[in-house]
Structure formats: structure tokens, C-alpha cells
Amino acid sequence: MRLNHNMFSLNIYKSYKNSLVDNSKALNNISTGQVLNSAKDNPNKIGKNETLKIQLLTNDAASKNIQDTNSMIQTFDGSLQEMNNSLARMKELAVSAGSGSLTDEDRQIIQNEIDSVKSDIKDLANNTQFNGIKLSDSTLTGENTSMLKAVIGNMDDENMDIPIYNVSPENLGVSGVDVVNELDESNEAIDKATQMVSRIRSRYGALQNRLDGTGDYLSSKACTIEKVQSNIGDADIAGEMMNYSKSGILIQSSIALMAQSNNFPKDALNILANVK
Image (tube, rainbow, N blue to C red; front, side):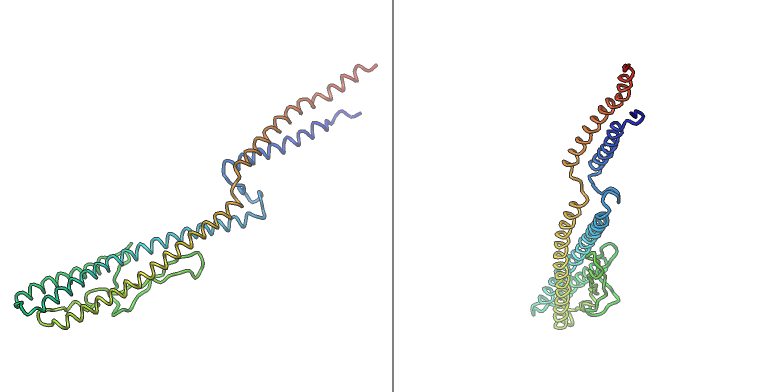
């Protein structure tokens, strides 16, 4: 009979160590809220989980880009709206100046207000900016544009070109409006400027609609990716709590059984000692 190896106690100790590992893992999962805390937790899914995390991060960054770009266009459109209002006032004054009942002094007073409106348009063109990006590019002529590239997605080709125009009074053609000496030409120039500003605003409006649609798509996409990533990497807290409680019970049971099994060799020796 061999008494130097207590195999029963060794088997209990092996089960005890496994329960300790399970208990520690369950507690760690509960603490972090994740089931994939290292590559060894699930080598087959760790790569997919990290890829989905990257997609979520880039998706969020693209959404922020869309919000910033939309805010910039809204800022520009607000100034262009004020330009439309100023041109409308200028047109009103120009038509009023065509009254045959006005004297030259009356027309000069109207011209003075028109000059003030020109200054307002110039200030809007020169001073409207968003994060250092100006509404107007004075190097351009006519309706030519320079382009700003905005990234609106997490793929290579998901970009949008934002056009920048020259909306100074000179390029709009209203800097020389003179209702005292050139009334007909002034009315025509104001009409052309109004049409140009309206076309620019129309293009910005189309870009805003595209940005809104893309933003909604990214939001829906983010929800889908987050759900898939959660199914792979997030811990089921209720299930982990059950595992934690189960392994805790097994640990306590193993300790009690090992205490009893460690007495088996001594009991066997006592029995042998009484054999005559």
C-alpha cells in the first residue's frame, strides 16, 4: 500500500486551481465589462473585435467632420442670407431713385445709403469665417471656385469638395452701382448679383442636404457595428455573476474537501498501527 501520494487530495487541488482561474476571470470580466481582455481569451475573435472597434472610432470621427462641415456651411449661408437682404434693400433703393419726383439731392441721399449697403456686403465677405476658413476668396473671379476637401466617411473615397467663391462687392458687380448717373445699369447689376448669390446659396443648400443624409447613414451604421461588436466583446454581466458565484462555491467546497482528504494518510496509518 502506498501512502506517500494522496491522489484524492491532488485531484481536489487541481479542481481548486481551475475554480480559482474561473473565479478570477469572471471577476475581471465583470470589472471591465469585456470578455476579450487579452488575445488568449478568444484568439479567433480578437481580430474581428479590434477591427470593429477601429470602424466605430473612424465612424465617430467622420460624424464629427460632418457636423463641423455642416456648421461651416451654415455660417457661410447665414452671411449670404444677409447679402441677399442687403441686395434686396439696394434694389428697393434703386427703384425708388427712378421716381421722377426726386431731385438730384434726393437721389444723392439714396446713393449714400446704397454706399452704406455696399460696405455691409464688403464686411460680410471679408469678415465671415469659420475656424480661420473665410467665406470669400478675393483671388477668384466670376463664379470660379477654390475647393476645400472634407472627409465625410471612413473609406478612402468618402470625401466632399466644398466650393469657396468670391462674394466681394467688386466680383458681384455692385461696387459701381450709381443711381444718380447710371440708374438702368445699376438695376441690372443688382439683379445679376442677387442671382449669383442665390445660385451660391443653392449649391451650399444641396451640400447641406447631402451632409445630413450622410450623417443619418453613419449614425445607423454606427448602431449596427456597435451591436455586432458588443455581441463579440462585451461581457454578459448576469452570466458572469453566476460564474463568479459558482466558482466561489466550488473554491470553498474544494478547501473543505482538501482539509478532509489530507487526513486520509494519517487515518490509514492509525489503522495500520492498530493492526497486530
